[in-house]
Length: 337
Image (cartoon, rainbow, N blue to C red):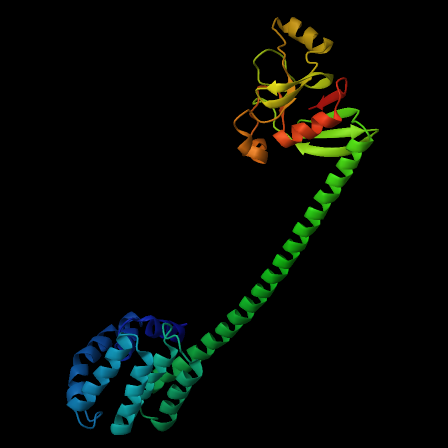
């Protein structure tokens, strides 16, 4: 974990490669802090007078140019500058190789190359066995190998994910195509049913929020519905916003309804009247199957997202037209809980 921590600190540092290397020292355990501070203090002396540089100030100046290019994000230009340094000042080769290895592996370098980074650190260890950068180079090699393996694993997983996404998308398109075919077949069956005759029953299932047209025991078509604003339980009294439960029939229709078109249901039946009388209340009335309120047809299918009627059963305008064609007056309406 120690070597991985150093690698993360060196590669994520925004400053110059050598500064990043020095900063990585600071992250070590507390007992190394004094040593780190001493290194910081003597570094200027080493840079200006140490025999590490042939040419003294000129070498230092060239290193600074390479570091500045790195700080500006000009990574290739920085590497080119380092190559010039190693040609002119071979005794500074270990530092050059170390910093080049960092530049090659730097996360923000779009052209980062782990292999070239490894080659720099490996060459440093081979050609400069006594270098002060040797130990950290060995740890960098270990860490980069781990990172390269992880990157390869991530790339493989990403490729697999993309492949799975494409497969899912293909399946989704197949499902949509099948759904469209089903809708087309349902519409053809419905059109055929209209040609043959009428529905003999309307079945409403409140819990499932659906209305089914039935002819001779077979379902012709199913519609999603909205109910009264207080849908649970049977209607008991005027104004309770409940949709009735029981058996009724279509007793009239209104083409000039405030809710586009409507089919009136024969609520209350005798059972409803007895219950209301026992409670000492009016059972209410005007329960219908109707479309969207006039002026709001643009809501369309979204109207079923909430129970919004005063006790009626609501469908879209197009659906009430279809239902009206198949349902003559006298058709049984069974409303289940």
